[in-house]
Length: 155
Image 1 (tube, one colour):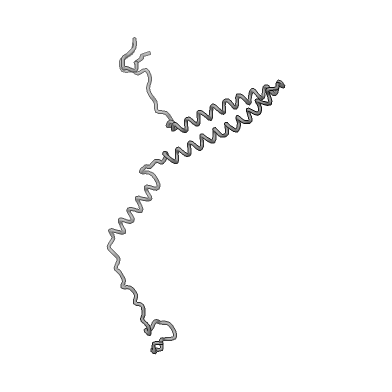
Image 2 (cartoon, helix red, strand yellow; image 1 turned 30 degrees about the vertical axis):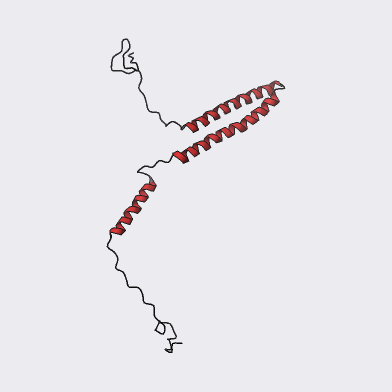
């Protein structure tokens, strides 16, 4: 098998053009640091809680006096583990809301904005519509089309 070291030199019996390994792209992007930290914390808490619960079960089966304190610790650990998992979900959602907005040309909102701008430009570039003179408001004593007709006395 041919080997090639990181500094580019070939090992014994290696052809000069073959690399020791080839980097492949990961299927998913790496989690943001705060989310990864809370996920690690949650996994550790869940692992410890499951271990305590298992030990509490075996102590209960054997009838040991340590069964009750460990069972209480397992119940408290379950509450803390639930908090840890919720912390991961909340941290992830918070991070996405703060930093996760991706503005791409294919975004729906951007396309709609583009259509609105295009429509406004068309309205501005279209020839102006002819303006009608404002309707004249009849003065006092003039015929307004309301029955009974004005008496003409001005009262």
